[in-house]
Image (cartoon, rainbow, N blue to C red; front, side, top):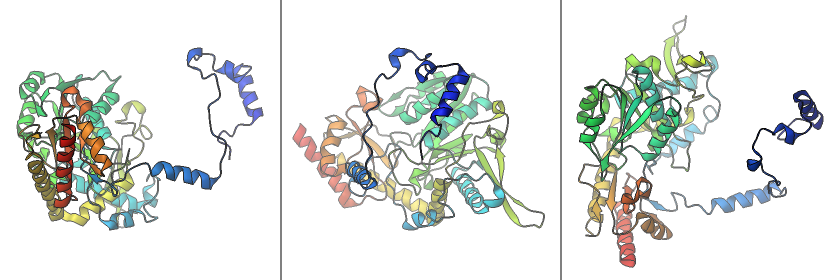
Length: 450
């Protein structure tokens, strides 16, 4: 099948209709200096078996989580995924790219989304959850835009301790909407509360925080909430769902919208996804929620059924009234997380969270026995912590990766002052021997370099 189905006669008719004599003339409005003059260097056709070998060769250049000992996090975490999750989600009833538009033929899918929404509501402590977003960053950006519909204004305050990649997505989403994004200063991963106080004013639409924050630290959600609520701004938190197994949800302190990345719950780490953005809000803001909501009802015979209750998408209502241009939801990923949470239950989730907490603190203590290594701050932390090294974090990662250990994520992207900082994540998967390998490997590299 040809990629472009138009025949030569079709193309000639198109050019004739447009009043152009050839394809180059059709592109006449494009500046000549950016038009490619030579042909694209595309290899000659090869057989399927050769393509497969070539792709396998490229794939083998990667190091996968089952081949390398990973302590990398910064938004994607190597949690254990029970085998039955893949088994269930790979069933033909679920393994489809199809989006459930027709409730009458998709009751099973709609029910699974309904159960997912119910779990997210219970987990976050908020009233309403949608059917899911693309990932944690897009969910947070949608929350900012939703806040602009709830409260009029043009300024959003974002904590400097929010994942910097999430911040870039927020900036991308709000460009052209007249919304100004202002960041709160941080010092060694700790939010500057005095600066936050100076920024929170009556014209602020919303304030955005991460909990635990990008450095793994647990900031005082109650104090942050009181500051924001005193000026009537919409309070938004991006949370780690695993942490809610042992931490109070920010909803208890007044959060209006809670979003997060669901990859930790039953979805493997992968370069670029697919991941899962979850999104929940208070009932009074339900009409402003992006995406879609699945509801439960009964038919005329009294049978329970599930329907797409709310779809404020531009495919269903006027574009100017749409809350978002998101076209689909991450139904399969939402199903994986639903199975994960149902399988663990409340006690299982608490156990995973407690193991993340205890093992990460054990690792931090062991690392800091080396006087050359120190914690970035003395704040409480969950699952992840930042350490300052006597050398650049990138150097350590490059050397330890050769030995099959990924010791963390270097934070040079935050600025030169963080070039020597390593962000280390320790999930329930890591055992004592693996943590010992991290410690001994890092100490060995420091001896070699210093």
